[in-house]
Amino acid sequence: MPLNKTVDSLAEAVAGIGDGASVMIGGFGGSGAPIELIHALIDRYLATGHPKNLVVINNNAGNGHVGLAALIEQRMVRKLICSFPRSADPRVFTDMYLAGEIELELVPQGTLAERIRAGGAGIPAFYTPTAYGTDLAAGKTVEIFEGRPYVQERWLKADFAIVKARRADSHGNLTYSKAARNFNPLMCMAAAHTIVQVEEIVAPGDIDPEAVITPGIFVQAVVRVPDPQQEEVLNRQGAHHP
Amino acid sequence: MTSKLSNAQIAWRAAQDIEDGAYVNLGIGFPEMVARYQPEGREAIFHTENGILNFGEPPAEGEEDWDLINAGKKAVTLKPGAAFFHHADSFAMVRGGHLDVAILGAYQVAENGDLANWSVGAGGVPAVGGAMDLVHGAKRVAVITEHVTKKGEPKLLSRCTLPLTGVGCVTRVYTSLAVIDIEGGRFVLREKLPAISLNELQSLTGAELLVPGPVTDLIVPEL
Image (cartoon, rainbow over all chains, first blue to last red):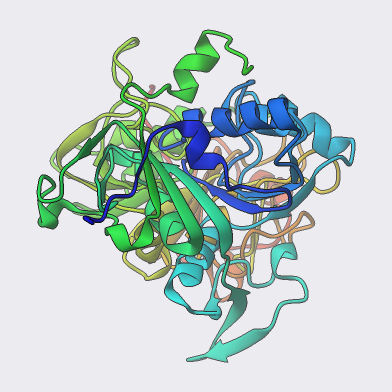
């Protein structure tokens, strides 16, 4: 039987994400954020009470009342690992954080990216100059290389990744749209089970191999969302999910 | 107090030092203004952490493409010769020494080159973004800032009192009053507004200003 990673519905795509799972959510702000997959996860929680106690890895903490912010607002997230939980309208996270109702692991953005890359590449630890001598390196191993101090950082892996791409073939080879690429190729590598929403799914061979950004080996499921919503547009409309 | 440069004028002055062909990262907020004042005849390539080289001006209102944004999550456009890349490659450009210049804002800068620009201490939600990465790796890390805080307290100090972004990383500071290099763990005055005396400038600075050579007048056009 030919290899086919296509899943028919968003609900089916996220059905395996259970309580306590670690979930990498793609995107930088709204670009590359898999809004429909996140909303499918929320819909399942509202219908069944699961999944909850999630550990979410994303660069930000969401905006407004859609996407990641809505996931946090439903109290489905126990802990957030991110670099920048402040932005234009992050009240949902801010209020819960200040009330002590959600845990935060703050990671410099480049370290976050490299930890995810390392997780996907099978590299358990690496050294970076970033954060040396700062509060974010407190308690971490420091070594000197060529006369300069570097901080040891550990890989970051997850049970699931949910990301948005532009186009997939049925093998899961992916292309992205402009700067919506950001963390997504790294997260595809670092999760045990990667679920991708794309605008179109084509036959193997219909994506030029030279143009593939994420090879299908890093992808377990693709689901078609032909006209994806964009967080910035939803927030300008004052949208809420649900 | 003596008249001082506006933010636009500080950004203009910093822009004059960006070499032709330089790869440059501008911190979000105030430093983004530097891009407006590139000198005629020089081409700098701007990098944004979220994966674009050679982005340009914001689009007209209503023309935004939200897959085309900068690190401040503002819509941008592309210039000919632009490139997209993922976040690990983006920060390889940063930490790997490939950027020529990073220009950042500051809460405090110390004479040993330490920078504090991410946290004002306890309270609120901490957020760091790419600042701690950017201070390591760019060949030149410059700061643009008011010379003193809104309360009139020095921002250039012998040691930072706020949480550090990076250790010994800043090499030049463009302020609303002066241009100051950091060399050998000391502030070295290079340019100052003609209207301010050396004594007055020193009194607004939290560490000794060395004046080993001639101090040029800091002259910036009205903007």
